[in-house]
Amino acid sequence: MTKILTVAKMVFKKRVLSPAYYWMILSPLLLLLVATGLSWYMLNPGSPTPSRPTTTSQTE
Image 1 (cartoon, one colour):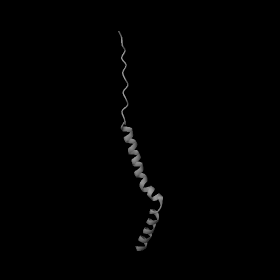
Image 2 (cartoon, one colour; image 1 turned 180 degrees about the vertical axis):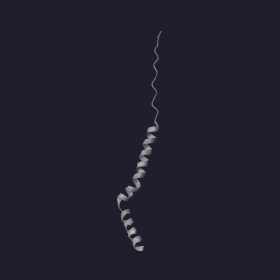
Image 3 (cartoon, helix red, strand yellow; image 1 turned 180 degrees about the horizontal axis):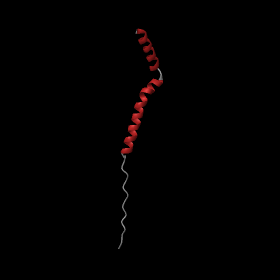
Image 4 (tube, one colour; image 1 turned 90 degrees about the horizontal axis):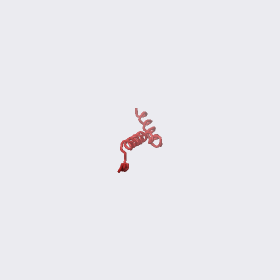
């Protein structure tokens, strides 16, 4: 049993040092943040658009 734990510990240490391990952990979080940001941006209009002046026809 200790051999299995030793091998598992060695493999874990090797994988933690690789950038792919961190990408596997961080990419779902990054995707969630981007999706939330896009959704928030699409639902909130941001600064209101200036209203157009209404023209009235002057008939005399």
